[in-house]
Image (cartoon, rainbow, N blue to C red; front, top):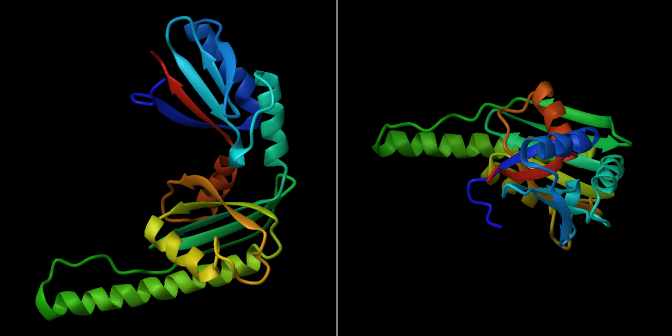
Length: 217
């Protein structure tokens, strides 16, 4: 079962059962199995789908209903979202499926220049300093908003800038910032535009969605 030519969708937990029903109408009733805790549906026409729970949790039974319920339970537990790009940052803490705390901010980081010589070096140094300031601001607000989080943190945006912020926070190390000792960086990484309030809200929903990989045969 190769992922080549497949499509990845993020389906809200409440729509999982309807999504599988529609898949069955298009391709025939799928045979359901479990593969390392992921629900797999194999249709008679060769199409297949894989339904992975948010935050990497395993499905306990080869059942769409069980998968949907497990996804709803996962989405109801505490989690965080941290988005960082050149144009800004956004961070959110979610508890019981509700936004408990959040912060968004805009920071200008100059784009690359085609100028050469000293001008190029000067722009590069300015850009590096701007990115550093933006990263420090994002890290400071993330430490405040996510303080006390005992659960997963879903990241998104520009990978290099996100990595700088998580390094500043000490995530994934033996010495994280105080209050973030129980934060676990999730494997899911969200592709987002410059973070604004609407982008953050969409990312909060995507973080807790079921990741469906579908191959139509």
